[in-house]
Each structure stands twice: as structure tokens, then as C-alpha cells.
Image 1 (cartoon, rainbow, N blue to C red):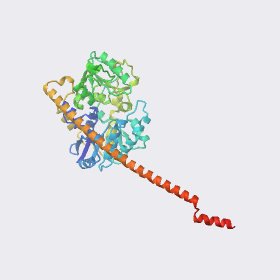
Image 2 (cartoon, rainbow, N blue to C red):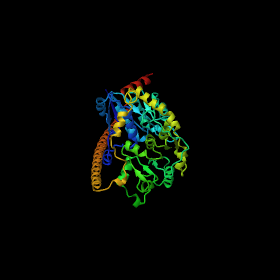
Image 3 (cartoon, rainbow, N blue to C red):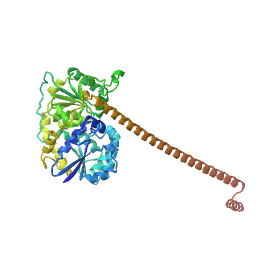
Image 4 (spheres, rainbow, N blue to C red):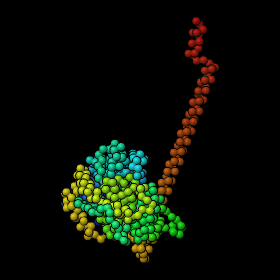
Length: 486
């Protein structure tokens, strides 16, 4: 039986609570990350032929010493990834390159992508080139090819000199398995009181325009649900802030003073399955979050992506998900108009082809899949259906003495950890300052010694010059004697 180790924030069958999510950061900063790791788990689930384990250690916490642990734990290491080719992820890429460089087992990367602007300009990625080259080089030494999100990422890696690159999109789109269809064509009309699900990234190049679009949607549909996805969203809902009293405002909903948090029904999913189940009850999903929209379409709810960068654009194009560039949308965009334009005909027509490409990539890299070698994901789906997951978190749920006690305890522990980190940083800074001081002392000594030697040499040279003037050397006297005797 092949032992497959998947890198992920949590196990698909874990049932995280609000408390455990806050403590463990199991959503890895964004619950969308669990969409594609869970999908990879299902696709690779072959009962009786594969033993799948999950490595929950975060990229940034890995060290080269983890290579021995990974080598011992598996026969193949699978790393589902997202938009990793960006400046913020450079340290992670170097860490991964260090670890992968010491692995003896095959390494398979699923769905990695580059992040640039809507202009799809690879020149913007120059600051990450070296880290990407190290990472991709290490992976391709241990695999037949690397699976990327779309053609933009493929072109970027080609410019860096890598040819073994396969476009496979995101595994999460195929979570329902073969034969899935949306069956939604253009020309439809929203019901009179539509249930609208909105998602929005907090950091956007065109945040001003995005804010106006969100405001217009909220104005027309005040009872919409804002599905927030980030760990920082969860922290904001859980702890609150003083932004209302302080009169602080931000264009995106990062503060409790934002209209989307004050006026809308807002929640944060703690894992993908309850998220998908919740979205199944909505009429339409819109927004800039690619996995917020993918979660909706997997639930069978039509979704429309506001593509705001290269990664959201290339995934939408590859999978034929209805979308439009954010910069092409009007500030007063009406979701009713978008719904009438939303057509999943191309998505349905290309679904099987894209799914086949994903399975071929797995086979090419020595991985069996649940559909050709197993039960088609049936055991996985049954286990998910039998698991009771925690619903998305809403602020109104956090009430009572027990919750208050937990908040106080968590805050105390976070303060202790912050103090411990500060103490470690202070100790490290003091050690560095001491080292710098020693180096400065050593440099001063070296400089003094060099100056003394220079002064001694100058003194000796001056003495020799003076001696030469007073008394010519023997060789000079003999030369003068020969010249005068002629």
C-alpha cells in the first residue's frame, strides 16, 4: 500500500470548533486553502491501495530536519498549493526548497500559481524569480512535472526555463467528481427576494472600486450574507475593535465599523464542508474571492467572479467560470444584471476535459486516483456526510460566561506568547549587539595594528631614503667609478 502524505492545514474529517480554529490557525490564514487540500485528499483516496496522511506543519515552521521525518512517513509527498509565487511567500519557497532538496521520496505539487496584476505582466514577478527557481528546481528533481493553475503561471515558469509544467487548474473545482454539471444558462432572473452571498478580498489593487461595488450590492440587497474567509476576519468578529467609537473607516471590511459587518449577515466558515452546505441555500454568489465562488459552484449555486489579479483571472478562464475583470465593472454594478449574464454552458462543456487532465497529471506523477483505481470517492463522501461539522461562525453565537472565560484565557495565553516572543527577540537582539560590538573591537584592533605597521614601514622607507642621499651604496660607487675612468 502506497503511503501518501498531503501537506494541509487540517484533516478533511476534523471538526474544528471556533476555539480550536482560533488557537491552531487550522485555516492557514484563509479557509479557501482547505478547499483544494480537501479535494486533493478525496482525489487520492483509493481504499486498500493508498494510505493517506496529513502533515499539518505550516510551511514557515518547516526546517531541513523535517526531511528525515517526511522520508520515513511516506512514499510520496503531495503539496497542494495556491498563489505561492508572490513576494510575501518568498521565505516559504526557500524553506520548501531546503526541505525538498533533502527528500528521497517523490514530490508532487498541485495547482500552484503566480500572483501579478490583471495585466498578466511576468516582469512584476522579478523579485520572486530566484526563490521560484530554487523551489521548482527542487520539485522537478523529484517529479515528472509540476501542476499549475493556469496559462499565465505556465508562461512565467517557461520564461524561467522550466518546460515540465502542466496546467491543471485547481483540484477543488472537481470536488464533486466526474460528470458534475451546473446546468445554468444565461438569461435567468433572480427571484424577488434573492439570497445573495458576497465574498471580498481585504487587499486589492483596486480597493476603492471594489468598495463602491460592494456598497452598491449591499444597498440593493441589505439582507445579503457576507462570507468572510480570513483568519483576521475571524479575529475581528470574535474580538471586535474600537473603530466605531474612534470613527475609523477602511474601504474594505477589516474593521467592525464597515457597513458589510455592521449591516449584513456576516460569517466565517471554519472548514469547507459546512461552507459548501451553507452556500447551497443561496441563489447567487459574487465577489473577488476565487474559492468563495468555487465553494458556491461546488454547492450548485451559480457564482460570478470579480477577477482582480492574474490568479483569479487565470483560474476563471481555465475553468470557464463566469467572470469579469474588476476594472471592467461599474461602481453601481447590479447583481441582477450579472445573474442574467451568468452562463455555465462552457463550464459544463469543458468540465470532463479538465478533470481528465488532472487525472492524467496524477498518473504521470505516479499517483493513483479514486476514480480509475478506487471507489470514485464514495467512501470519502459517506464519511463526510456522516460527520457533523461546526457551522460558519457568526458573532451572535459567542455569548455567555463560558465564552467570556475562554476569551480571557485565550487573551492571557496570547499575551504570554507575545511576551515570550518579545523576550526571545530581545535576547537575540542583545546577542547580535554583543557580536557586533566584538566585531567592532576586533576591527579597531586590526585597524590599529595595520596603522602601526604602516607607520613603521613609512619610517623605515624614510630612513633608507635619507641614507641613500648621504652615502651612495657600494653598487652606486662602483658605477660612478667606472663612468669617471672612461
